[in-house]
Length: 286
Length: 39
Image (cartoon, rainbow over all chains, first blue to last red; front, side):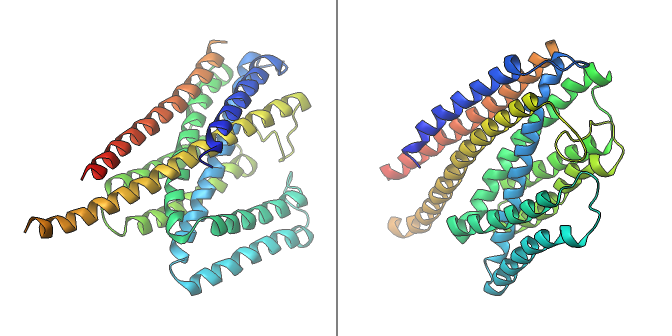
């Protein structure tokens, strides 16, 4: 990974440049909103990326807590498998599904959740899931900040106001505040129990993600309705640009998350060495 | 059009600021490692 990093960074930069060109030049201009609609190509992919990284943080936090106890670990493994199987069966049992929800998307989500859980478990040892949790939370907060900044910049010319306290906007702000408090806890608490406390906070915080995502499906909000699923529609050329931008942001987020993860691991090693040195110093001075 | 450019510029300012913060943390950590090696 160390050798591939510069190559991946160059490829990501190229992809981000191409995505920017597609968003500003190639994408068709929306008829009612005009050019300001192009903010959508940064706003929506940033939101999806933030949700994904908060979900990674959620999975890592669960694993940090359960992998300390073999029984809890086994129970959680089976619970994840049950969730995946239930997601595949549910669309056949619950009929009709809520408007806009496709049976295939329910099944895919269930399988993706289980896949991500076991992928993290396979590639990250128990002691390192906590480091990945910190890294993913930080990246999620960066992208959530982009969402909260670009949203009002779109709303001002379209709605005539910068902000309104509707469910989608308020729950997104709450989500951002929860993860800011998570990062503050990690940064300033020196207790040995901090990772466990932070993991518990992250699990509760992640419960806000479905509320943010489904708020525009469940509640009547000022925020536009979903363009993908939920009965929404989008011009195929716009969808193409949206997905290109999401791919570019995903690659970028994965790279910075990896860098942050490596930094966290290195920092912990340095702190351990410093602590050992501090223990040994009095003896050597005698 | 101004709002569009403001949104795109703000996005990149946020990302670049985070990258600079990461780079500074790496730099600080590297100097700590160097100090440990000297001991």
